Length: 274
Image (cartoon, rainbow, N blue to C red; front, side, top):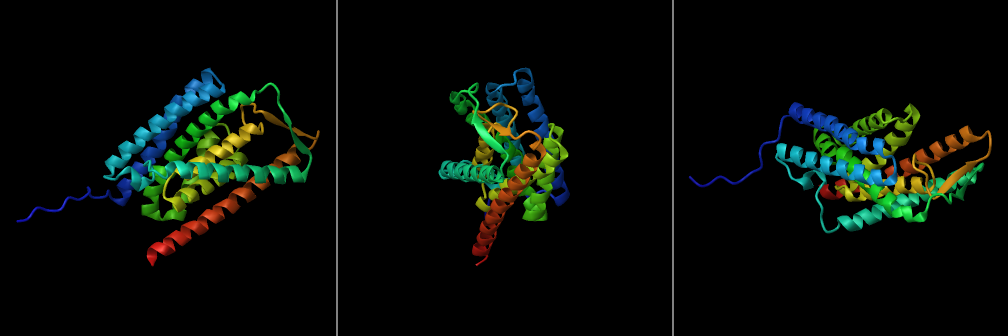
């Protein structure tokens, strides 16, 4: 008898695969909470870098463990590093910067807010902030748009998985102190964009770039818990109105970008089917 051909281990059943994804999604926030202890004790941009590094290393290890458990490879879940990853990361950052700029222009056009220089924050801190937000973005993309998205995509389809993980992403941010509106319409809508970008490009480099640019841009504009080089000055008594404008413009910009990546995704599917 001839030797049988080598093959990958058989895929787990649907129920087992779903259970493993659930276990992964439970383990990732626990790792983040552990890393977040650093930020709680020393809340500054340097601690964000340390927390991000711990979270990325832990989530990467979890990804490698679960991928091996399922008899897969890192490229099966878009978590491998390839020669074009750097280019896609930069491209994602440029697109994300464009989105931040567009949303800011819409908010500024609506009036009642302007951005002024915050002299107490040195521009030299930008490098530390960028590294910190890059690490945090990499952690979130690994935790939600890597192993979980690609495994659930096989089980339930891409769009059902995208919506499910957007809800889980929103719930994690809700647990982190977000309000319901910011968790659902902020983090949840952002998750749709990052997830669709991951599906369209079949990797994490571009969504990591997108995510990094968005968070870094918000820091630049003074819209994060850490003061940035600029800060918004809102006309007295119009804070609620400006907040609504910011949220609406954010949702519009994010959904527009999500639609573009959805079109790229559907075209990629059609080209494969030919």
